[in-house]
Image (cartoon, rainbow, N blue to C red; front, side):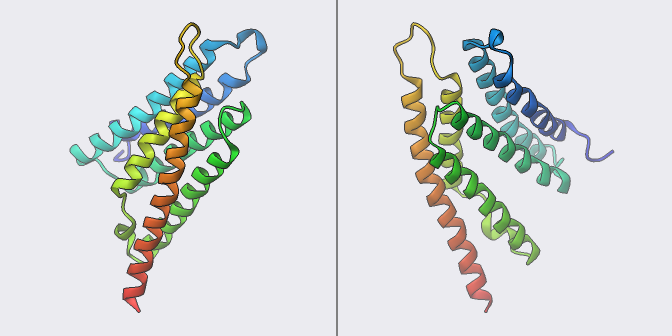
Length: 190
């Protein structure tokens, strides 16, 4: 079957990690502790690495597909949204940060779908600002999942929330960039 190759399997792995990642935080109390934070952070990091790796392999091996192009961003957005919701639930980050990032992801996904329907999907292709936003966001989430390391004086929550604030600023900036790009394309078509 054409859709079954290593890049798509890595994407499916990311999808399969989501319930495991989520359930870690809802284990009975006697299973709680720092190991839950570390396990969640490792799963999140693995998901982030497979996101980069599956895209790289798909392009390099010419194994891109419409299904992969659909599933890859869905898997990414799901694990980020769930991580943000869990971090808000655990009081490790601001609900406003989660709303900004999740709201932007929904808005840009809808914009890309609409632009694809009118044959202009490339006008909202990933820009450098989106890549910086993603990097800041992923590192922030990773640090906030770890939360703290006993006997280490480094305040991971503070660093994570500073990066989350930077990610939110870049999130708004990138959303405005994509909306402006779409507006220019639509305006020139009139």
